[in-house]
Image 1 (cartoon, each protein chain N blue to C red):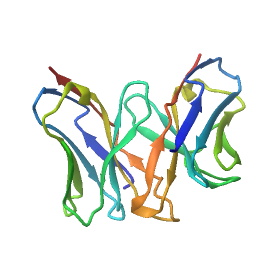
Image 2 (cartoon, one colour):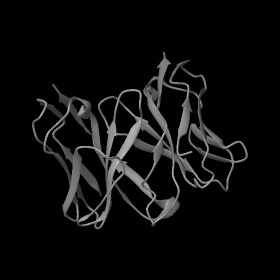
Image 3 (cartoon, each protein chain N blue to C red):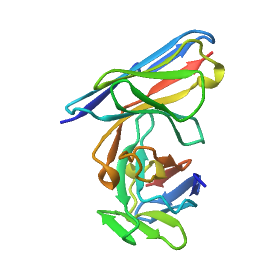
Length: 115
Length: 114
């Protein structure tokens, strides 16, 4: 029930295309859903996050779509660029004890954007 | 601005040797601090987190331990490393509460136990 299932494991997209990464969760107590971007040899960096009271959040070319009833959320990267090539992690957590840092991460999606 | 320092970047240790990884945060006070381990194909696993000096919570039973001797210092240790301890170790910090909390990661330590 604590798992976050992420797919696909790897993704190859042509430059200018749309990259879509999906995640699903079971625990309805989760109330925070961030996405992290990680380049090789670096730590992950927060990309965008969403709360369950909205169905979509957009920041530049990155959009999170959230389906509360289906317990699914996805990351869409519009106009994908070679510089977007990285590993993307979805995560979920619930607020207890005042700390949101007990994130449950998906296993990651390695995105390659071909020029 | 806040920065997080984690060292060393890479480490090769023999089985049975001790381990000490250090992480410090600058530019903030009383941060929440975390140690994660990342294994290939297995995502990020939370090992320890701390909400204050001397306050450590362990998420996964193992032969690793963590300490927070100062407000902005977090140390990951082991008395005797196992082969299975190999991985990419990440320190992270956060401020804020609830859904406004953001997690910031260090650059990681690649540990190889041989």
